[in-house]
Image (cartoon, rainbow, N blue to C red):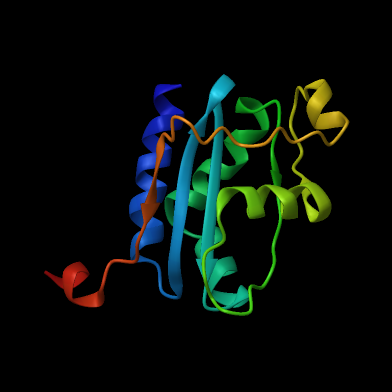
Length: 135
């Protein structure tokens, strides 16, 4: 768990500084469930982030660390970062499963429990401006 949390922090720093990052949210849920929601200018810049730096180094470890993992991509017309319930609905209908070494029954059955929002343990992630990165 300590390594996972360190990589989470390092990936959060990386994403906030990534070109094309528009904003996002992190949520720590019950049963060691971690939700990530990010918005990007376009798919090209998202894939550039995904394949570089700390994020690229940690993703292969999730195969052993997780018993459930899924993701979904979509375009939101107004550029607003969706809320957790809207994101959950989209994941439930359009999500794809990631490969994991020891899948849980929920993973195999594509059951995605709704995120627990009370108490909300999470934060918004905002892009760091180019000025702040240079300073």
